[in-house]
Length: 333
Image (cartoon, rainbow, N blue to C red; front, side):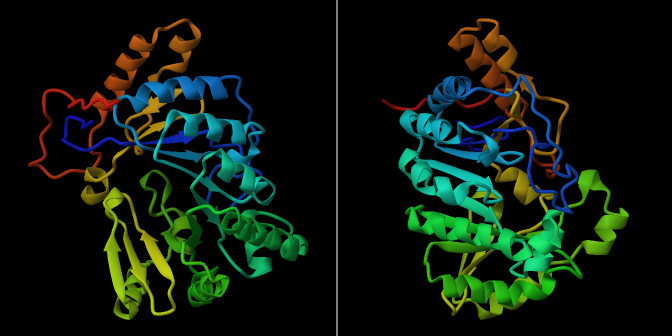
């Protein structure tokens, strides 16, 4: 289906845990690893029900996030339920917690892509970034590396390594990261370099000013080395294939028209709300409360269509004008 701005909507990003629920305390994450269980978190059955409804409207891919999705004891069940609905792609972003133990079961359940956070391959730096004791450095880093290898061994189609690049912390490791990926020896591994994002537009914050590192010059340098360049339709991200047979993808600031006009995902919060815009928290559409109060599938469909109607590019040029309504193309079969 297409929203009023003629943007394709064919993906969903589901937060399986509150954004505050994570066992890491990464320095760049304002949530700081606070544990906060909410009674309103969706159950596997509730996730399956709403996603069966969305599948009828052409949703093809699902990305599972958190907080930390691997902290859910029912994560394998959730993946299996989504797979049984028939989505073409089920992916996850994780810090690697428990992943090495569950990688094969998750793959068998239907997970075919995973992003694993690896912000440094220096043990002490790694622990400092994630807020762990530096004395546990080698052990904590090894857990993450084991999770990465387990993903490949399980047969997951694409494995991305997420690296938030920070000035004075790990910007000097980019070439080492490329060598690390090369030495892994897998063709389906992508190194994803992420530019630090400032919270709520606070680009003058002390933290942002101290750690922000412009990836523009890095991208320009790798572009010259690359033997192939691909621009992904989703969010217009660029990927470069280096002579070392390593793919590098850049995640640059989302605060631009290209990002907004090519964002094909709608988001679902852990507590059962459709989130029409990544940058806004004032137009969520609650479906979990009506669902628990006995709403029919038709009523839930209307809530989904309302959320799609509310989708609007946060950044757009003046010539971008909305249509009167969404364009619905139902799933065939």
